[in-house]
Length: 252
Ligand SMILES: NC(=O)c1ccc[n+]([C@@H]2O[C@H](COP(=O)([O-])OP(=O)(O)OC[C@H]3O[C@@H](n4cnc5c(N)ncnc54)[C@H](O)[C@@H]3O)[C@@H](O)[C@H]2O)c1
Image (tube, rainbow, N blue to C red; front, side, top):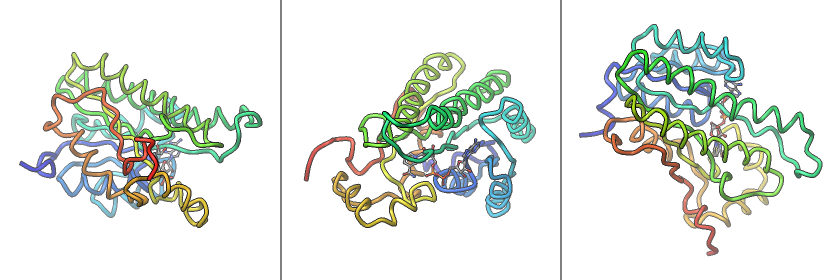
């Protein structure tokens, strides 16, 4: 049986679905038969993705409880939400911790941590109300384990996402809700495009990756679909690297 055949009619909410990894996940979920709600701060982008894949596009600010409640209600209006993919995220620039403004730290924290918390809370409660379980997949980062100079603020948020993943998995297991995360290394998306265009930065990244390639969103979606499917029914609380071996920390 293929994980691609398992989503017929299931409602899946994908945050950050206007671009990058979220858009790729939304596209493949829709191709697998899910009814996908594409939710993003970029409302026009969310609607454009949704129109392309035959889903529902909604504007969502994951930092705002009212906005989260509205997006979750829109998704639940299509039927019980079975899948949530928390892909909305920001990096918020780069800078050494000793000079990083508190405002920069807080801004990233609000989206990546508070946002993941708020959407997880709202969707988990909707899943519990319906009583048929579900699956949540968070998009973390290899940076949670492997620091890079200048990205400490961002990496701290992803370490927090890993902790939220484990706590939520523990608390939601009794309701048949599984919570897992993937931890990508660098992926070619709008998020990284500027940095990847710099040949020196690109070479430095590649040197850390045993498989010596920068991922594309397509390299991640199969694992997200597996984690969200019933074939992963005994898997919860895991944070799985998809990083070409970067987190091994070895040298070539
Ligand atoms: N690209 C990478 O190298 C990489 C590596 C590891 C992890 N990640 C993580 O993957 C996730 C997706 O990143 P991406 O590379 O697809 O980036 P992206 O910038 O292409 O997509 C992120 C999306 O999140 C949306 N967003 C931002 N703030 C939001 C908010 N407040 N509410 C709702 N939506 C909001 C953006 O509009 C955008 O469409 C992020 O959580 C990121 O931290 C990315």
